Amino acid sequence: MPSKQKTLCFIFLLFLSACMGQEESTRKGADHASSDRKVTEKETPPPKSITIAAVGDLLIHRPVFEDAKTSSGYNFTPIFTPVKKYLKETTLTVANQETMIGGKELGLSSYPTFNSPYEVGDALKNIGVDVVSIANNHTLDQGEQGIKNAISHWKAISMVYTGAYLNEQDQKNIRVVQTEAGIDVAFLSYTYGTNGIPVPDGKAYLVNLIDKAAIEADIKKAEKLSDAIVVNVHFGDEYERYPNQSQKQTAQMMADAGADVILGHHPHVLQPIERLEGKNGNDALVIYSLGNFLSAQENIYRRIGGILQLEMEKAPKQDKREIIIKNPVFIPTVVDYELNANNIAGRDFRVLPMSKADESVMPDVKSIHNDIRKHMSQWLPELTFK
Image (cartoon, rainbow, N blue to C red):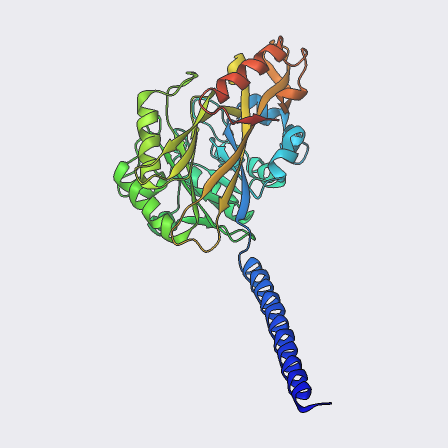
């Protein structure tokens, strides 16, 4: 082969080799970039999420605890069996145990000064309740001893309690429940008063009263210890289906302070749900009253309560504490019972989903159920129902 042809052939081979090397380099670079994208995707986990359920007032009137009496004590669990699954299916469940479970040694009693069997607590534990709020207008019905007895039993069954305490140190201990999903939830509880029964001097820890400075301080402390804050508050006018101005102001104050969820109790009837915007732009969900979950009250609307379910979501690696409240669901419930010889609520108490109740439980129940759905969602259009 002539020298010139050899030279041209050599140059061509060099050029071909360079092109193939560049193509390989480009391909490898693309593969490397693809690998980087996969790593980045793996390093960005999905948001953390838990679910919460909440129920309203548990008023253990005499007909209720007499109906639960057995040969060896009391068994309240069957009363809740029809709604148990709704409390078990969430990550955490909170209830307003309005009557102190001081035990029969203090003498069981009904309205106006309640005292309930310890077994009420056992039933709540059995049906999936994780936290009880015990700050309400009946907290001091049996004095300091009633609170001590109740707390002793709550501790014995490993139930988280909030709103009434054994001492100052117990009160200062913010209740924070850790979850497997990595979202820690603080629970706080307050009441407007104690039916005129004075709090003993020097023992303010026996019950948390609504006080703006104290609530703001507790929420500020809870923010440092938890990812989300749930506040139970006993307020409002009994038997009124809408919140009063004081309730709205109190709820807004709590939202401004940093509460994520505000659960209202005391009116004994349902009041609507809405979203509030805190002063820092934070989102809070408030239900002004969850109504009666269990009682022997006979008025139609006092027999109706409900289970609020919601999702708490926390985005990963965020720089600031922020919880998103999503997918609120409400399950209206009704207290069913048989009338006794005096033609009043007396036996076979059950808490039923309204969707499962028929005319034998409550006359015109379908119409009332529709009314409740409209009532509860009027300020929260995205609310869904079960």
